[in-house]
Length: 424
Image (cartoon, rainbow, N blue to C red; front, side, top):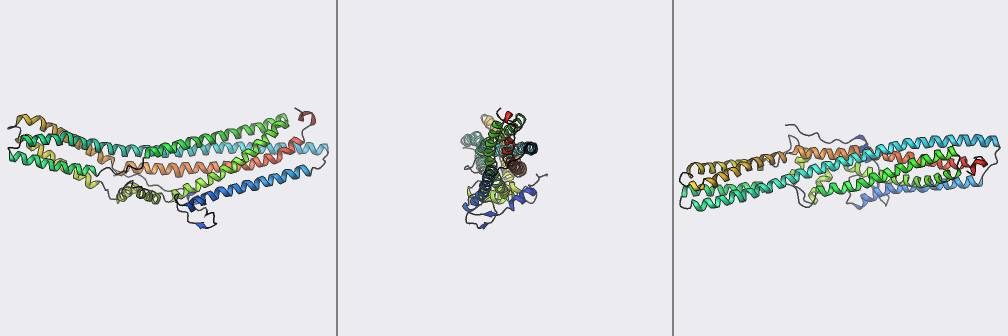
């Protein structure tokens, strides 16, 4: 029997996981994924704080630079001015082109992250469908056995009240039926407190607005780059001033998104380094499923014990005995009680349908399907999604650097525009 491939973490997961985790009290913490622990959440917020400190330092340097630029103007001759405007113009053009390339990286990272999250939600939907199908099939089978088989056996017991040999077979059949129902009742393994469907919908909702926000951010970056190039071509001071204001805004946004991206990436990498440990603790905390069932689905190997094997084989054995009893009644009792022939054949038909349902249940509770969904979900989050976040972080870094360059060079450029064109 072939089993699904197990999850293996990528190199960038280990790299992000090695980031130091520091609490607000500047204490070095263990990097285990513990979202319920306040100190662990502080370590992630600390990373956002580092980005905020970087932004504050960046703005302070820009402020000092602009003060120096305003207070320390040097008188330059016309030839030097023309040389400066040519040099600064080309510097802005190069910075804008590099920023445009970073925007392409941002689009790729946004798409990769979205693909990873969609892969996760699709796996959650598939797993929820499997769990729901198991619950529904067991419920329908139990209802059919109680109504179609149990009620018919009661009528047969009344009809065969004066024939002890037939009555004994009917009562044995009722005992076997109770045993079969007891076996089937132990098959559903998912707790009622957690819904994978609701979890998938919540993740999709958040991801849609994250993807949309980044898309608008990237479009705004493109507009700013176009404004820069248009202002240079038109030698328009007004456009460059507008670009400068938007550039400062985007610089703040770039630092902010960088902090969030790094914090989220580190948190996700902590989970991806040891997902089984966190999932095991979560399932035990909310009583989602038993530990042996969870290990069966997490590992899905020949060495893993199948916790459903005894229930499935026991159900088929009891069902076979039950069918034999009904067949014996059909052979011997119908001759003396022809009116009971219809009831006996109805029972046999229901038992045949139950056998088909048990075989379907055996296939559904097999670990291959849910283990595949588990591996797909992890690959979606830890491979595609986390890689996309790294590209978004790279976009934020390059974008911040390029906006710094443009903001610093732009004032020198418009100051050297010709007076006749400056009034445009």
